Image 1 (cartoon, one colour):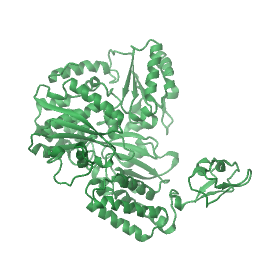
Image 2: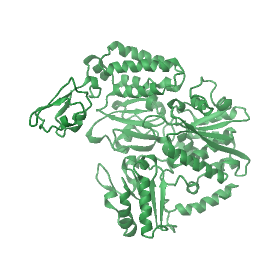
Image 3: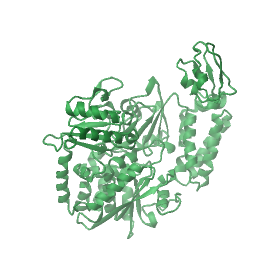
Image 4: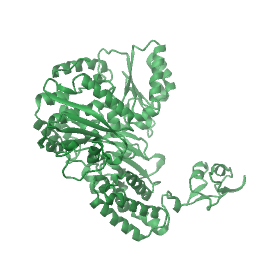
Length: 626
């Protein structure tokens, strides 16, 4: 690769590269290929054998002498993960879903050669049953706005040429050539960008603190230690658009006066790590990282540091400890990292999504970004949408979109005709949002007001089959496991809290235990050292606030209304519905079901372990949960 020494060379390279991606940009004119096939190569689709499909499609193209006519691109996550692997065929932009390696032959012979769409692979809207040919025409995308995810699904993340074709590194060139550090901070202030890692701290303020700190050495850190259960927002950005993060970190380095950056990423994200390594080497090879960037005298480089999977290292000071080679434990604050951070030097720590927004803000203007969102929460937010929802996947919505819109319009509603009960946001640090707040506009302040928080962006939907006491217990078990143990309120307090929840789900608690639990929650929140401990009680407090009747049912009536807590339920056979097929008895792992063929069976409650196999096995709804 030839070094890019100035802004003009970058612009010339962009114009050359745009020709190779013109088809997926849906531009008219001559294209270097007859077709382009975009295949999702995010972790979700890779696990569903999308790479096997790539191998199969290339084999079919070779058989038909079409290798030079068709460009096959492994791209990032499209977002509609429930329908993956996803394949888009240009120039028509037709999208196929749940594609298997064996489908490659049909796509080549029918679509590419005959010009006929493969009907069985086309997407049918689950409500209207109508065929939707283009991915962005599905209801899933109608209320979304892709900013941080803009290039995911549009570029090959392993080719810097693709990123440059879509205006990549133009923001960095603009900043180092035309803007002062104060100009950049003013742009961020006008945009209203807040940290997307959970707390929502204004980005411009964090950068201005670090800029004001006097030191010969400063650092820029990307926190990619995404650990919330069910969260995969940062992973998807790194897998699908890694150069956006590198470019933003370089902009941050220029702004605060740093020449070194680190990306702290989970070792459990091998695809993200691999693509980051490729992106860094490509950027260095072009002179977009390293010495004298764009001939301006600005030096900045980035290295990776792999985390070992400790959730607490998502807390910025614990992350700093880990990079320095020590056990990942939080530091007391102040001093804050912007004053005394990595190796005792001024440091800024932002998460992946925060950085991914910065180049777009520079290029499109801060007013463009501020035009989206609410008064105090500007722009968009990426959520990993999961749980009891039709369209699980990655969504990016303008802040201020209501929870109902996310669940019903984007997510496609609750499966099997069941009713929405609650949504958990913020992971172990967040809370449950009940149906009474179904129409709340999602932003930082609104969520805190109702006892939850934005968090990094996990959003888990629950229906009436979920027990809210069990949900609180699930998240607290996670927190107890992940506590670093440095401070007593978190190390001991969360364990005592979990013990009370265990008593409740076993039907052994009293109403006094509920009072003790609330008192303990307040103590943990007020005295823990870091954000992990301070927010650990949130799932308990929010479920107590909105679903106290379920706690009372467990304590007073000794029953679980949702039929989840094993010690408070039993399975019974309904004689009028039992067909004497013996399926339940044959599948019971402990032989707790007795009876002869053509005679009604019974469940021995002394032996039954309440595993639910009989309930899942019976095809006649003859098993009842009491």
